Length: 458
Length: 173
Image (tube, rainbow over all chains, first blue to last red; front, side, top):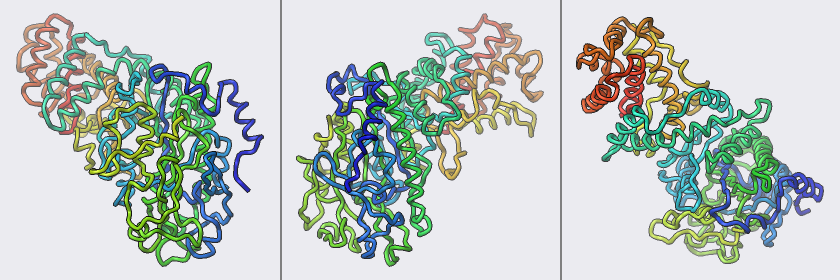
């Protein structure tokens, strides 16, 4: 049976959104110019390396019976057919996301770092395109060169922080719902700094004087100066925040907070990491995956439901004006070496990740890409065997960028140009937001930029 | 150390700033109650902290941004007002040595409050020895001119805020 939302699900979804003019397919989105259009970004991070075989890149039970892959859910996955005719398999754990099937597309077989399988290196790669860290793509979405008026902050992190090495996140501010009440109340009681008053200008002058030249203190003084310049506006904006009701779930509180931050032009983006940690090397940890995913999928669905049900203005829901990405730093191996599939943990797999993209500007309902070793008889390419001789990992299949479909050939040698990479995913988001091309990620240092997935953009 | 921390200095964080001010301004062994100036619970975490469950090995939120600058300014304004309001009776548990320094300055705008000895005593009491002399000179010249005829309360409030918002005071070097 193909897993698609029931008519009741669909009707409930569309009727529920009717009051806020939810229009699947994005006709409304096509009508406006980039300069006019509000556009925000929500990134949901599954921390620790989530096993995509428990979501939208599942394997048949026959593979488990053949000793190829662990499956602690123990249920046959259902086919999931994209509107583009590309299929995948989905487990029952993704059921909470079904009401949003026409709001997002699934990207499977996404290749992460070329050479590293550590958490930090791949989280760095996800955010910056460099395993050792660098400039994150999130602030780029808020650059004036995009044609949008920059928001006061590049982003807010509304959950506990991720461990990641980033140079340019000084404008991505940790702001959790529990802090908002005290912050807004305090800021309502005190006047913002007055630009032009003697003391403010003196403090600004010392920051300017100390931000000249190289060195870490100079760089920080420059950030302080920039922060001080924006402080009156940010003060005014933060003072308007209403604390989310404490009886709401953390995800509902997050939606309430990011909605205000987007509406008040406080922030362009938000990052949220559910508390589940998916790093399951030990057998006992791996056995908890059905529970981990059940919990995380409910949280993601709560966030999406909140976006869909919350009006941005009298025409659009928050979901209509927000591009949403759900990603982990990498996927996981099929099993651990030399362990039976009913008593094994799993290790890191940077060769095949799954990403969900949805919301504003994204052509939804597609399945893009695929991973290999998805049947017990499936043959690995020589390219795969060279990178993973024991075939512990699934790997993205070669990818046709013109049709956004997986290829069926089995390459002799690995060439990153043949594969769907995280670089293409980020460049597609860049294209959506109008980020200048000089920021686009390259496939590798000496190679061209990763292709934008044009067919994924409305 | 992460690359991000290599790129720019980090704020010391509220806990470290509180400890430094207590060491300089309070009697030995006494901690000033400075947490009262943080606008709300948890907001000190946004000024730089080691305190994160399961992540004690990395310093978080130390990179300056507009939100942290708003919070620093609100918190340090509260502290500055307490210092300025302590000329008659101390509002915090200051040491006798600091009260002597402060009371000399409380005679502002009288000439004796504007001597280099008085100003330098106050500067070093609050700033410590973190900043180069040029910072002291700029601070002194600003207050001797712009605040020459203003009241002691307004001047000491502004002097304290100017020192504590200085990058040499707030940042790890």
